[in-house]
Image (cartoon, rainbow, N blue to C red; front, side, top):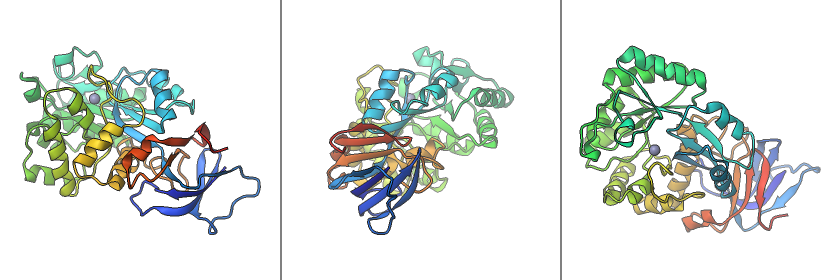
Length: 363
Ligand SMILES: [Zn+2]
């Protein structure tokens, strides 16, 4: 299958390529280039997407409650071809079997949190999606057991309760570091739930890979610089901070602005259904609008929603960009999202694992 005539934004941050040709064979992208430079196989099905923009499938790197086919179908239909679920039951076999259907968004799942007895999210939510550990040895064992069961990523709670107005026991540095060491030893990244700055140095000392929420107090510039220096990716979940209604949205937006100005790496995630509030299902346009308020350019937002979200999903090897060798998760939208990010909501065509799952007017 060949897409021709559209402008390609490949997700790497490279300038857009006009009059692009993308050749897909099976579930893979096999050639990418400018018309005239790429040979179009005679037997190919050619889809002319002139006047539209070709992008990688979008990835929402912080969601919950995805073990519902209806949600996964809604995401895929709107071009969100992968989601990263950061707290749920340890039903990895189910998650990975759902992913075989290209009409459903692919799921990268952490399963339960690793936390301490009476730690977050047991307190304050009463969540049962948590494994409690006491001491580094138990922490190591818990990480290994989740990975044995099929965890794609490990989620830890570093939440001492400042944002909840009550002290909450939390993982020590030694326990958090033991989780990270065990996970990294098996090629699995670790995402840390952090909501306020005092819990951030422990996440950085432990060596986590990404921070799953923007903090909502005022982190020092030195602390932000440390996040940048260590290459830790931030997943801001600005939509969460809007919908919880605690008045955290402006602080979260301004912290993101400071982090981006300091050169930090951002991946898009909303915390869909992480709180009992109406989150946006499908293309995360509200999150993108808030990122824009934080000073991110449309190109930076697209990279955050594709390449960087694949990075924190541990899938940059095969997802997140339109490049040769990657899985053909491709979205075609009307108009130019670099001029107006809302163009991403105007989806015309979705390829998921090389299968056309939506085509509005390109036949
Ligand atoms: Zn969450």
